[in-house]
Length: 346
Image 1 (cartoon, one colour):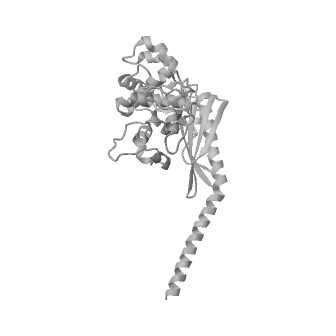
Image 2 (cartoon, helix red, strand yellow):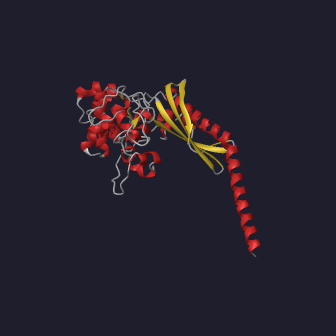
Image 3 (cartoon, rainbow, N blue to C red):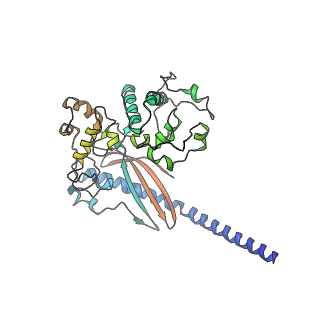
């Protein structure tokens, strides 16, 4: 009986091992097809973004348009966009879904003079809910991370501080390429960076060794740095796609004015991304926002836009039970020039 039991266990273990190996082989064999499906999703996004500018003749980009997942305005009714779906697009042995998000809905963390950036960082920390006493230190630490010198601002940090950590590293002293670099900056905790989604992003071993301890009673922030900033964009905020929080990063725009901007662009139903939306056609229309000071309109026009030119594309690919996410950054210069700036997967 003992021999029979042992042999049965060995046979079951061997069968399970073969099942796992077979599944891994199938997935490995699908890698190339998955990559081509991901690239196909990116090409679909390029086509949609090009058509949006070419055939609708709308002088703006807004949340009710097809590329953003909206129903499309009346200008797109008799165009190729009227028959395009970005969800569950079947191709070959698999399918993919595409999600397009413009990066002009966020503030470019590298754009502008230091004085303006410091003001924007402090306003962002205020919106996140950081203690007021930490505003200056964290803002200066971010500026120290991106400036070209080793001079430490008040409360900031340069390489000589980061070299004392375990493991040690240097301050970058260059513009931010990936926003997650902020997690290496002194004072920026996962809660400040991720905001309400911090619980879905456990700390890495590297962050734990740096002393980023998440207390059990920590309050969830309503928004995080990842929701407000991007390292890639034209540097001008799109009034038609920016969130309530992002709009408040613009100098002279408080919560009341930001709310009025969203109310005006969302149309009679008050909901963004629906057929009755009334997007801004140019930044000069800010003059129509209740409570807006007409004297600051020229300055706001230098920081705002109604067009988006940089987009992040997420492609969710499925072949059977095998799934993978692909990402791309697109730069749209014209309907005939939509470039792939980067392509990667997770």
